[in-house]
Length: 238
Ligand SMILES: [Zn+2]
Image 1 (cartoon, rainbow, N blue to C red):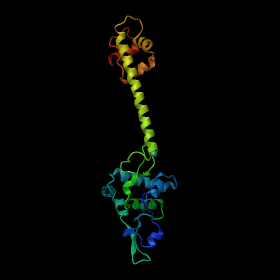
Image 2 (tube, rainbow, N blue to C red):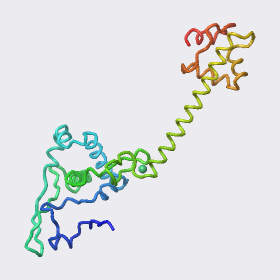
Image 3 (cartoon, rainbow, N blue to C red):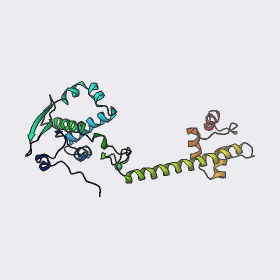
Image 4 (cartoon, helix red, strand yellow):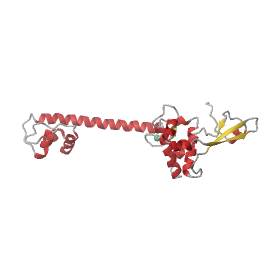
């Protein structure tokens, strides 16, 4: 069985089992994920999302992010360090993010403190999201997992892409059929106007043909004669 790493507990901390000199930064990302995906408290969640979005957009490149926002750069620099004694001979250093120049009890201050927890978290790179399908943040299971929170979201998107591809393929085939018939119209003796004739031949509606011409997918015959006033422009500007 794979060894499951126990989460940080007060007991292991008090027993002096922690290896890290500096603790206080949570190693799990579940809390930040649930806040990022959450709606309540609204101000805290949205403020934190804003910070994480900016952070991600920067690269993430924390140095760049803090250089671009000098006020934030000063705010996140501060924390308190406490010495926490254990029942062994060892003491731990606990770092508590303390954003400067912002009310620590406001949602904004709290969001900033959570963000500071994230940027000192040794597993920061495992925070993934928003998922391209469900738009949720998630903890990455592998480093290749970049687009979707789960296999379920990934395969739904693949299915969707396949459907879209099929739809495009069907349309292309329809345009080819319509174009062949439109080209043929000039060579046959008929009193029908080209769209009407093509529509009868291909079972494609006149409305669809008009739209295809307007979109530039379908070329109208050059000698569209007898030329109705409305169609002459299309014939000259296929
Ligand atoms: Zn998802």
